[in-house]
Image (cartoon, rainbow, N blue to C red; front, side):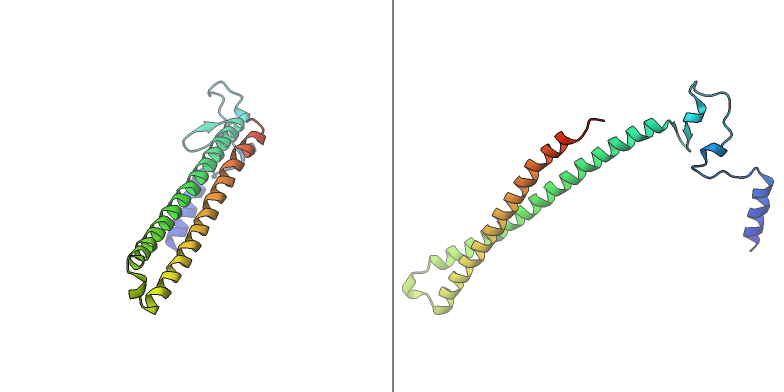
Length: 151
């Protein structure tokens, strides 16, 4: 309670604070950088014109798009590596089973062979789909950038 009172007394003693965005309420000083002061928005660390802010925002947006695209590529690479590792593990197990002569295999080993072949087949299909999807995305991005109007 005392804090609220001391703040209110302190704020009343000083000139009233201006909210950000209230450009028309800001008292501009006559001296400056030689620009038309009414076209400048003043912030804590920097002073920029609206056009400069728009350019900076456009640069940030392009950077964001590049980073999102790179994140997507890295996720694809991680998924691809994981699928390849899973396929290699299953192939190794299958090779061990195939090394056993057919006459010596138990029914359970023959079943496991079939299961491994099915699992490998599914993982290969999944990886093929992933690669196709990545290729479509890669081909689609340059066409999107060409159709963008220059800034």
